[in-house]
Image (cartoon, rainbow, N blue to C red):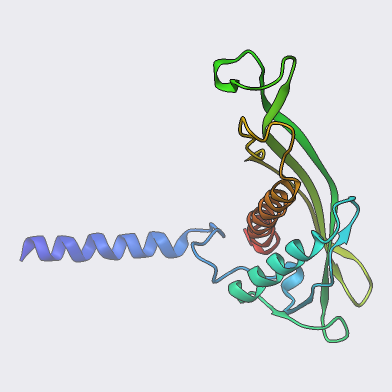
Length: 195
């Protein structure tokens, strides 16, 4: 009996303290919203400022998927929307992250003075703005950076004088698509967070 009464009293005290708490941070997506509390957003094609053709579709599709999945607001045409998400891919660079040279035991059969790139790194920067359509005021703005490595085409001893450039382009596109998905999850979360 005494334990039951003590338990009720402790539980009541915890509920009272919890209800008085002024912290605005909440778990889950229930309180997420488009900046300004708006319910509709237009997402036109990202602007591609790089020389890498077609990658804007990866970013646009990824952010649309995140807004549709998150159900924070409806993605609609610009004529119907209260806000617009404007995205741009500002830069993309490719760096060699590792190489091997002839003379290394792993490179038997390579011509003398040959250097082979074994890994590349993609570095990407994108910017997103959310504007209110009524007066074009910027409600939210952020920049997102991503890095990702991938293997260079493998060159065997018999095909030393050739590399598969289609593989390299395909590997680039797959990695950029994966980077777009990751960055747009982060973008959606940062845009819609409500503390």
